[in-house]
Image (cartoon, rainbow, N blue to C red; front, side, top):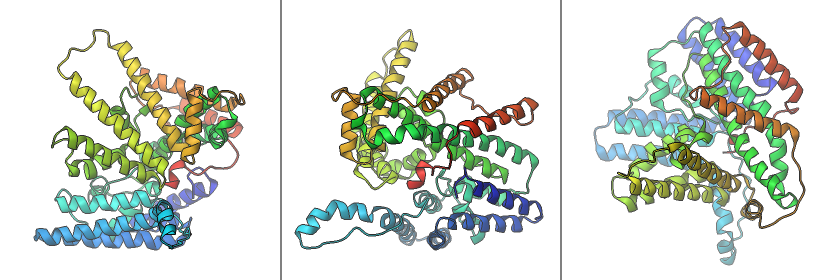
Length: 469
C-alpha cells in the first residue's frame, strides 16, 4: 500500500472511522497494531511472520537484559539480538550480492551456485535498525525494557513509518505509550493533515514528475548531451529529496493524526555549506543512528586522527551498503567518507585562524562545492551499475560530447518551483511551507494544490524510492 494511492486513503479513512467509536486506550492500541499488520501484509502477508519474529526476539531480549546483572550474560543477550536482526537483514538483502561477488571464485572451485530467488521484504532495513537500537539502549541502561508485548509490537510495526522511516528509536516512541493516551483529537487531525498534504504534494507533483525526465537519461546517458546529463542529475537530486522527504512528512502527518510524534527526517539538506552539515540535514534518523550505534561505539574521534578517519570510513561504507546490495552504494558511501574526513581535516587546519571579514562569498563557494560533490555522488547512487555511472560522469565532465538535447517542460517547471521554494524557505528562516487549515485562505491554497495535482501530476503512482532499501 503506497501513501499516494486511493487504496491507502480508503484504508486510513477506515482506521480513523473505527477509531472514533473506540473509547478505551487498549482498544485504540489494539486497532493500531492490527492496522499496522494489515498494512504490512498488503505487500506479502508472509513477511508478517518475519516482523513478528524480530519483535518476539527483541521483546524477550529487552526483559532479560533488564533482569540480568551478570555482564557476560547481558552481553550474550545483546549478541543474540544483533545476530538475529543482522541475520535477517543479511539473508534477505545481501545473500545474492555476496554470492555474485564470490561467483568467479566459486565457479573456479567447481561450485556453481545459482542466483537465489530471494524476495526483499519491504522496510526490513528500517524495522531491524529500530529493534536493534531498542536492545542496545536497554543494554546501556538508557531505556527501560517494555513489559507490554502489545506496546512493543506497536512500536516495531507502527504503519506510518514502518516501510521507509523515519527510523524511530524506542526512546522516542515508547514513552509516548507509557505516558500518553491517544484519542482522536481535532487539533491532531488538522496538524497531521497539514503535514501530510505537504509531503503528498512533494511526492506526486514534484518527485513523480521529475522521474519522467530522470529515468530515461539515467537509463542510457550515452544518448544524451552533457547539458542534459547535468540537468538530469540536478533533477534526480530534487526527485530523491522530494520523494523521501515527502514520504517522511506523510508518515509524520499520519502519526500525528493518531496522536504520535515522529522525528523530523530532513532539514533542507541542499542549503548545506559542507558535507558534514549535509549529513546533519539529510536522512537525519539514519545518520544519527549510524553516529550513535556505530561511529561512537567504534571509538568516534576519541583515539586520534587515524582512528577517527577509520571510524568514519567504516560507518559511511556500511551506511552506503545499508541502502542497497550493490557496489555502487559501497562506492557512494566511500566517497562520502572521504569527503567527511577531508572536511574534518580542513577544520582542524583552520582551527584558531581568523575568519574572513566578508563570509558571504566564502559561504557561496562552500555551498557550490558541497552541492556539486553531492550531485556527482548521486550519479553513482542512482546509476544501475558502475559502467553506466562511468559513462554518465564522462558526460558531466564533457569528455563525451554529442547526444540528444531534451528538456521535459514539466520537469523544468518543477525544478524552477523547487528552487524558488528553497529561496523562500531561506528567507523565512528555514521554516517549512505549510498550509494552516485554521485560516480560510489555506483552504483556497489547498483547492489550488488539488487542481495542480489533477492537471499535472503523472497518471498512476510510483513506489517511493526508499522502498527498495
